[in-house]
Image (cartoon, rainbow, N blue to C red; front, side, top):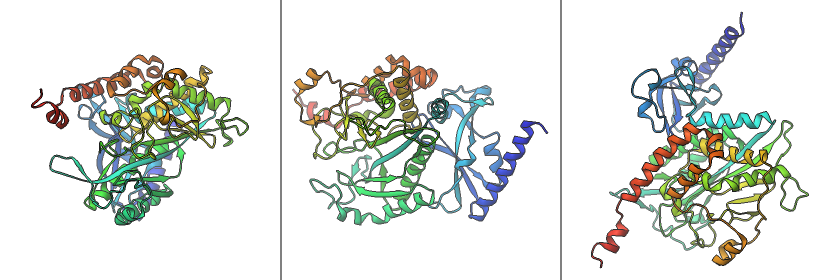
Length: 456
């Protein structure tokens, strides 16, 4: 028997075992799920009896119907197939009878380069070549809301209106059922949720779960979104990762805790003897992130609304810290990169991102720092929210893009990052996001009506 036949036989045995396990768990349908260029979960319901099809040839989709694939409307390249990763097959406790399997893209029988999950896998392979594993802890902040007839957000709890609502137990108690169902469902899926809290705006919460390798972390974040949307909706609420749903309240981030370990599990970026707890490699990684931060903003904060959060100036309440300047420091939440316990907390990211692309681009930036032996600027261990503008100029501190348009311009000129992530993907991303930015610039808002309709 040749090697290919042996591999096919081994896969068939694994599929049989997995199907039996799903049957015993009461599963009748598998959700074959992938993401589009925006990071939105897409897929089909497939009867469990056809599990072998999902992990074999894959599940077929009309490519032009999916954001960001850039596939033609006819010919062999018009079909997009989602090929399932059997390791991700997971029973969904909030959807009895259903399981999810994560798919990566295949077009014309080949791995599809513009599949964002494959972009991340490519960057992970670059780490693996060095014997490294990127571990990622993700901290999703989100709102639980209602909507009015114009789809504007409304706080469902009128009593959740404290000036400093962080850690408010009274408001949490009123939505404890939803939060508890999220916790139970995610824990059944192996997340290990270890805390949930009320954040710094009315209706805003954060749920923290255990870190994992980068690919698992990305797959889990998509599953978190799927679970949270459904559980909230069943309770009459809207789950929102919108970065800034209220102009007068703090926004939501998606902080990424990044650390690297070697084959023996030893930390690569940490050095307790260093003044900031970083090894030389750790400093090179942070230098890469800072050097590419303007372009990274396009991937990590990819919506028009993202830049209502990343604004220059003080926090609205004094306790929610959205970055605006490209600096790093020891346990400094006013910086875009906070160093703590030998890891980097990258604070640029928000929940409107495609998590696969966000992590892929972060790895590419970190590896560029290592490969070019970049050195970060002098760390800033001060509350830069208290700085006058003149001090930023004196210290040579640069500002993050303040609009999506500026971020897209930065990405377009960062050829190193584009080459690492994938030139074709970046071109498609820029094309879609440029259209989004132009649409926004041409729109007319309520603010403009109120200010200009009868003026001057």
